Amino acid sequence: MIENINWYPGHMKKTREMIQQNLKMVDLVIEVVDARIPVSSRNPIIDDIVSGKKRIIILNKSDLSDKKANDAWAEHFKKDGNLVVTMNCMAGGGVNQLLKVLEKEEAKKNEEKAVKKPLRMMIVGVPNVGKSSLINRLTGKRSAQVGDRPGVTRGKQWLTLKNGMQLLDTPGILWPKFEDPKTGINLAYCGSIKDEIMDIATLAMELIGVLAEEYPDLLMERYKLDEILEMPLDNMEAIALKRGFILPGKRIDYERCAKTVLDEFRSGKIGNITLERL
Image (cartoon, rainbow, N blue to C red):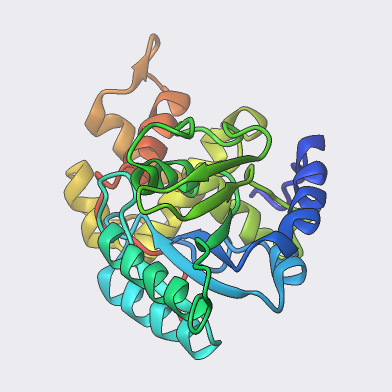
C-alpha cells in the first residue's frame, strides 16, 4: 500500500511567495479544484495565504465527476461564504456563468465611482486541475500552456480577458507534506502528481480497490468483469486478462494494465466518479 507521498519542487516555494506578494493587487481569487476530489485538490496553504479575499471556487472537471456529488459540494462551499461555479473548462462548460458572476463583482467594485476600473483577479490551484484551460476560455486565445501532466505553467503572467478584466495566472502549488496520506493518493489518482515518482502498478491496484467498493457497476461494465472479487489484485488481474495484457510466459503485464486503468479513469471512460463525498 502507498502510505505517503512527498513532492515539493523548488518552484512551488517561489509560487507561494509570488501569491503572497501579489495578493494586494487583486480584488478576488479564483480557486480551481478537481470536482472528483474537492478536498484533496484544495491546498491548505492557499487557505492561509488568501484568507480575507473574496473567493470563487471552480468545481472543474465536473463532466468526469458524479453530478449529485457536484451539487452537494457546491452547496457546502457556498455555506463557507464562497461563490461557486461548476465547470468543464476543457470544453468551455460553465464559462458564461462564471463571466456573469465576474461582471457582478466588477459592478460592485465600481459602484458610485467616477472612474471605472477593470476587475483584477488571481487564479490559484494545485497542478493539473485545469487552470490553463480556464484561462484560455476566458481570454479567448491560447494564453496559457495546457497539458495533462502536472507542472506545465511556469512563472506568473498578467492576462487580459475578452471583457477587459485582468487575470494573474500562477503555477500550480502543492505543499511540503500531506497530513492525510489519502490526500496524496487521491491527487496521484487524478494525475496531479507525476506518475514518474509513483509505483503506478500499486497506485492503479489501489484505485481499482476504491472503484470496486464505491462504483462496482461501472468497473464491471467498463472491463466486462463477471463479478467483483474480494482482493484488488485479483480484480486487476481479471482486467488484464479481459484486455489481453499478457507477457511471454503467460505473465500478467501489470504496468500496461495500470497505465490503462489510470488513463481511463482520468479521461472519464470508466464513468462519472467522485472519490470524495460529503
